[in-house]
Image 1 (tube, rainbow, N blue to C red):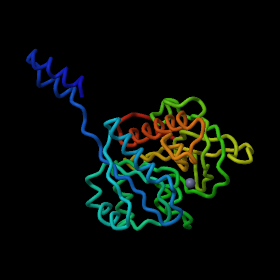
Image 2: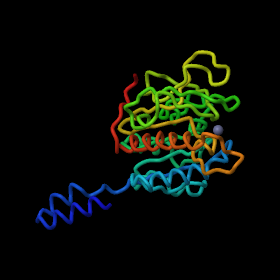
Image 3: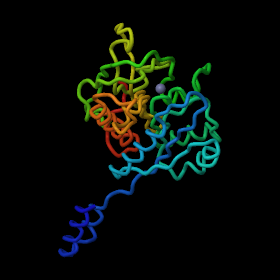
Length: 273
Ligand SMILES: [Zn+2]
């Protein structure tokens, strides 16, 4: 705030207040709804995720958050009419078939040019249906299974993209790594991937994070974010690992970049590679 204030003070002195004040005025923060309702497994990292997302919004000035934690809040805040006051949603470790008041209206709302950000078990939401649920089509894949938590090297597929440009060529961390069903590289823009199975290390293509357009809407998904110490180093001792500070700093840059991209605040490619 200091620089715009200073500039507008100078502008007033110079009698230029109109033009300069407008051009230096910071945009109002976007409004995001953080959804953490679960109908299946409930991650212990949800309160950590909610706090980190709020902090990232506040520190960056890019967005504010409101929460949907219960069925009642979902019924109230996620109707077609109520969604109009928000710029996007973050599904923060949701699971199962959520009681959205009108799923098609929700998907149409994203398509109209809103942001959908999915964290980790957002792919374990509306999953296991045949054919694939329309939510899964929007997101780009669904969770199939996972094995033991593993140390992996995520390959940075687009160092120009806001979600990846603060990361090295390879992002090393320990987390619970998802294997996906219904993933199609011709429909998404890859951001992070593994070139070998997370556990048995057999060569292959194991997507970790991607983005895509959905109508006019922007979708960003990262499967990372099971462990508390991936989100923040500020965790109970039993969750802590030696390199938690480096990992969580990189992870927070990854998700903040992805959120800003999904909100249309920063440019990045969404075309399939
Ligand atoms: Zn998990």
